[in-house]
Structures are given as structure tokens and as C-alpha cells.
Amino acid sequence: MQYYEALGLEPKLALDLEDLKKRFYERSRQWHPDRFSRASAEGRQRALDMTATLNDAFRTLKAPVPRAEYFLEESGIPIPKDAPAELLEEVFEFNMALEELRGGDASAREALIAAETRFNGMLAEIDASLEQRFAHYDTAGDRTVLDEIRGALNRRRYIANLVRDAGKELNVHVAN
Image 1 (cartoon, rainbow, N blue to C red):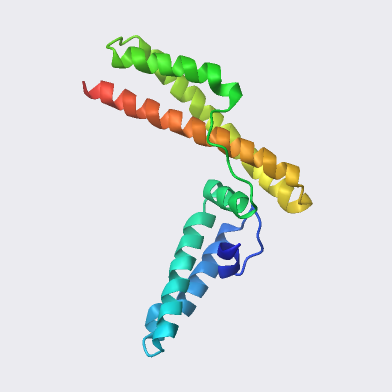
Image 2 (cartoon, helix red, strand yellow):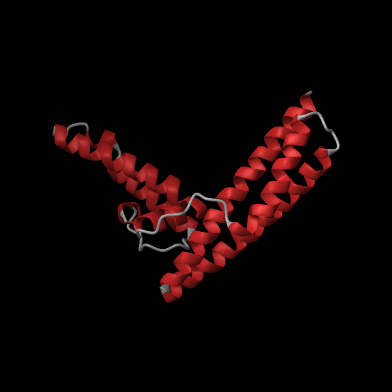
């Protein structure tokens, strides 16, 4: 797990963000390309590579969702991209409301607003459950928890896309 290693961190899902920032800034100063201006071409390139890795690591590990996606990917656990079965009915109703709104039926706007609110609530629940699962995995190392996290991330990704689509469509139809 290259990003954790670059920052001198133990690979975990729950991280202390202040410690992460501190490590990032320390290592960024250590590997800053200006410090290697008189080094060999190889040394300068190594500094540039480490700086890029540190920036990518910090950007990925500072937020819980990208961190979990990275952790799972590095653990060989891909996140599915299909719609979770338990959401299919809501997705169908949501898509119908979208089509009705696009077709000029202003009454579908209320259904879309309600769906967006419901989906935002689901995202908040998923985010809270992820934090609990992160702590549980870090403590117990139970691989079944990684499968639960994978399912939650898949569901979260799908719901986040629905919220994005609803917001976009509601904003378009406010302007018209």
C-alpha cells in the first residue's frame, strides 16, 4: 500500500487527520524538489516522483470514501459498479420522475425533491456506518467487514450519482 508507506502510516481505514496532515507536510518538506536542485538527474527525478506520490496519497487518504476505495483496491477487493438490488424500485421511480420532469410535467418536481432528500439521508447513514466499519476492521482485521464496506461503497456511489442527477435536473428546470 504505497500511499500509506509514503506517509509512514500503518495501513488502516480510520485515520487521525491531524497526524495525516503532519506527516504529509513533514515528508513534503523532506522531498521538496528545491532541496534536490543540486542533486543528480536521478535524485531530482526521485524527488519529483515522491512529491507526486505524497500529493496523491494525501488527496486520497484525507477523505474516508476515496481512502476506503483505495484500501479495498490495494487489498484486491474490487467495488462493483452495478445497481444494488435493494435500490432498484426506488431507482425506477426516480427515473420515472426525471423523465416526467424532462417531459414538462412540473408536478414531478416534488417527487424528485423528495427523492433527493431521501437519497441524501441514505448517504448520511452510509457515511456513519462506514466510520463504524472502519474502526471495526482496524480493530479486528475481519475480512468480512471489508465485504460489508465494499457493499456500502457500491451503494454510496450509486446513490451519490442519483443525488447528482436530481440536483442537475432540478437546477435545469428552475432556470427554465
